[in-house]
Image (cartoon, rainbow, N blue to C red):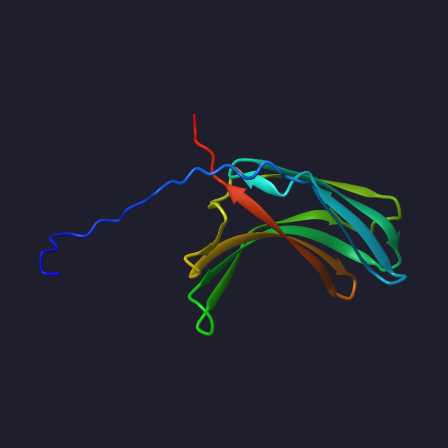
Length: 161
């Protein structure tokens, strides 16, 4: 290709609305006879300037919890097996509770996405590239043991008016 005169970086903005179904996420997690929590997020697909709204319910608490964090994790995958490369990055981390909860307590969640450098979710582009996002809920007890639950969420771009 001796005819190439110059190279330029090209950016493409792809506007794709998610499928009509945007179900709430409801999950339960626990340790038998020690801890039982239920958490829910208002939906599973968010635009890049959206707000994640949710609640965490404590149904059973028999361990001493020190605090709880919520983080957004971006996981990028490139290449194809067996030469696949994975990279994870924590976009943000918030402490949403400090101190021991009691049975019946509810912790509200409201996380504004507009302040973070997010990109849309891409799944298996040409079977070579993926960008996925996860909400990671972490509880830390007084002995610094970590209990966590990850849930995949989808981000999409909407046209700016």
